[in-house]
Length: 423
Image (cartoon, rainbow, N blue to C red):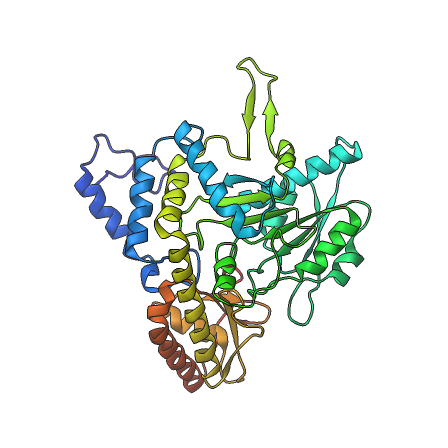
């Protein structure tokens, strides 16, 4: 083990004087993981998206083959073309559509906003014009993160009775400085789709950009629709949709660091690029926010798409839909609990207490003590559960634990303290 550092401000170990053997390092890594949630067995509500060991093995082996290569080599360029070719049709992209590979939903949203702002400035001949984006209050916080970096105002507006963003509220908040309408398919808090056909008409009428955040459901809902699930129209088939963000590292079952931002018209990607030449080294051109990107994420995403194929994605989606249906039915069967409606539209379920003797936060605490990490909702106070294929096998156990936790809280009159930092 490392010797303690003599530095007075350092609380951890110092750099080893000599390197340690891999066997020792590997053993310590396993020790460190021992306290992590058991995500392969469905004990985590989100953040990980586990399908099966075979797909997980493909992820790892493909990543390792490109672990040191940057994106930009001929190999990664070829794989990116394939990824775009395989993905764009899933979103009803028209001929001439374009895409960029990013490290996650936040970067994808950032790229869409940066591109839309650059286009708006160009069209309005305003080099430094300040704009605003209008979005439902359920939009992901990465919208505000990106807007803050780019000095753009975000106007969040109320949703309708089904918690969907809708045209009437959006229109009221728009003005001549609005450059984008932002919608979700689905929103992360409730798992419901905004009324995107309405918003597409609003965006077209106003001549502004409409971005669809499909980071959660982008690689889930197209296959759910093919399985016969009723999915609201939300993608490029809707007139007015300008761009879509969708995470490959969620229901594309790629490893972390893989997402797409897609554009109805690839020509707008000239606004996406960053170009600079005012330094001694020469021209610097970057297609997205990050400079050097790991080719491992590209290789792994490409490999998983090849490995699963449409049949594999359909089977994975069927597991999500079945697990979601079981969750909704099981929760509603527990006295004192109910799912917030609409429930289970796209693999996200929120449920709350209907019994004053059952503090839902205390139920979440009890579940955590039993090894089940639960997401928590502030408005309404409830438990937030994302569903992935790993939850299918564990669903019966989870529902049993949930029923027991609910009864335990009721019997012992327990109360919990809501943690604002639940996400």
